[in-house]
Image (tube, rainbow, N blue to C red; front, side):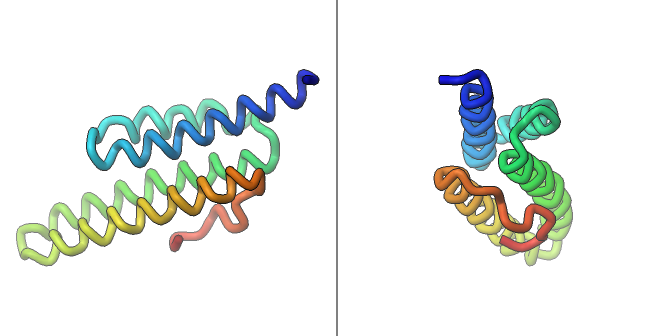
Length: 116
């Protein structure tokens, strides 16, 4: 295997690990921080199609954190609990969709989106 193909395979593997860390964070919590750090560290040297996944992962972390904090604050008025469930579902969908594109070796079509 050539050096370039090895690099792409490593990039793809790292992006996959970030998605898995994000999903694990729903149970463990801290793994999302490890995942976003990995995404930031690897985003500049990755293949172009993998860069879209890193951009998507970074945005998923920050948007999820913002929505999660707002939802947690709104737990005082009960609606926050429903919002937290919604944020978790949104987070899972984004990770699964990202993994689907990654498995097909395709760039994420719109990494800047706020939706799924």
